[in-house]
Length: 412
Length: 111
Image (tube, rainbow over all chains, first blue to last red; front, side, top):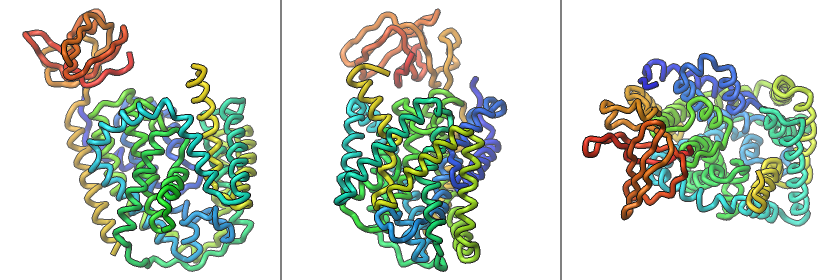
């Protein structure tokens, strides 16, 4: 069916997506993947307007990457003593610089968006060739990444890191390949490993946030440039390698470049979130691979993408980034004022209840069991003083094993 | 200061994105079609056609083949030497050569 789009409906659906992205971004545990899947499965109306629905999903995803900086900084901050597993955003929060952490992340997101537009044509050419070159070696690359991350620990941290990687890998295998598997399995798994465990620690530590100010020292051009470039490169890793999340990619790049600048890390981390969302959409067009739930939803709505879709997606992404920036900064200021007035325990408690409730609604009793187990494992890294990134074994181990089986034995 | 610069960049991105969406919306999306449905009025449009590969010839750096889904259409891939399976889908622009419609290949997709 050949039809043009009504520009008014394009703008309406894009704005609806921005609204959904704000909701997803602020609500702990609600991810655009979940909302996208819900939209598609609910979709008699959306099936009638697949392109408009695609716009909604894209703007929702990109807006979420910005607004999500707020709960990731302001919620789930563990006790300050667990330094190695304390995310830079939380360090800033405990110093009263939460707004600065959010703003640095936003700078990274805008930076990589601009860089992606400037490098769009070379990327269209390079990415398929790059993927074709590395795809036979993906399981070995993932093993190398896991080894590099473990080796980056010191002393007893290495066996602990390796142990957590393997244990979460076993959990991932059980979750995806057993009776626990469901369309929303990722939610309790990742929510328990990274979300609920952080919230429990912050509640137990009775974190008291200092007053948050919105002033920040001038931003060095070097920090913005290097942070953006690193975020972009890390996002490339996330887009090309399955099982690698933004935080692992960020740690990889920081370790590889031996950078200790927290500001640069925050800019890079903000960039990674944005560019990995963009790449997961581009990967659908360039290499025909679904790298995220939102890409899967788009594939289900419109099938194979054509260049027309890609240009539309890029336009929608730019719009969402442009609208997401003032929304995020405005909401961050609100959170700064709320942090001073609302007990942190109340915020964390509400977030905890939301995540448990959503788990029960989306995945039932089996999902709750996964959540509890994942939470137990997720508590290990901060308690033993290693990086939380090792818990991504929950995705990397299954992918490594399945890829190896396919490569070596032609299975799967 | 950083806020203002960021907001300026955001405004430019939002405006550019909105303009892009509205401009693209004014043009119809490339379509997939049965070969029999492709006509002279589709010249210049991007189309996806699928079918059985017949008459596969490589001359120099170019590949010429015919896709047949009940009706045949010529497909030409300039500066591409292709190894084709028995069935495939070709995405490309509809053109005309010596009075006959053909598809100038942009890329192959799974059959």
